[in-house]
Image 1 (cartoon, rainbow, N blue to C red):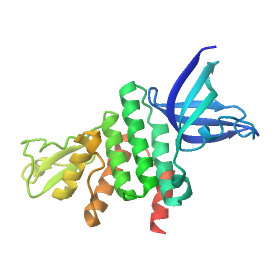
Image 2: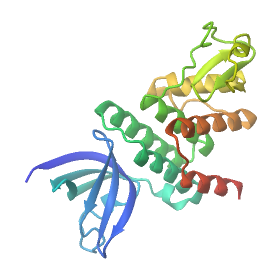
Image 3: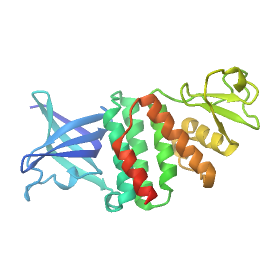
Image 4: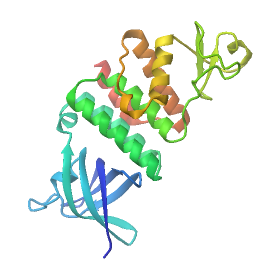
Length: 252
């Protein structure tokens, strides 16, 4: 029997019978992997804690007939505050649905996306970052890590770095200055302020160690949230019910 050891976060769970669960685990090497947790609901199960939703654990897996099974698991950290707050839980549920839908499996993307998700869980648990800011960071950085980075270094035509007004086109992910945008006939663009543009550039271009080191508030934050959300939904090509639930929670 061949064993595989991998670290990852449980992002979704589905019941199977009285004592078992199917788990989706965001791993550091293989993207999202579906795993069977046999007997996990029994009182005597030794890996029940490590298999909870939003637990970051080290899993020892076996593979039989094309399916992974948990043999043992060791808890690294459980992000309890995310599960205890309805707004935070609904936001992370949205992220989890994106992760399960958008397949990626190469080692570098898996490692970076796991790091991104773990940092999001940490800041939500600590309550030190606004949820809308974390939402935009996840949406834009996830798209960048999976090969859909928007081109925001400069104007797509004249390469100008900054003018008083800049326009971002969601459909092609490109930036245009106020002089060149009229040449883009038929392309709808969003006029973005300099603070929003700097925030987008920071999210998609900065080193990971500094990714969360900025703030945005007021109308600028609202615009960034709209842009990041529309960009992700447009290029993934579907909507997510968990996003609608999160937005309803925010309204109420």
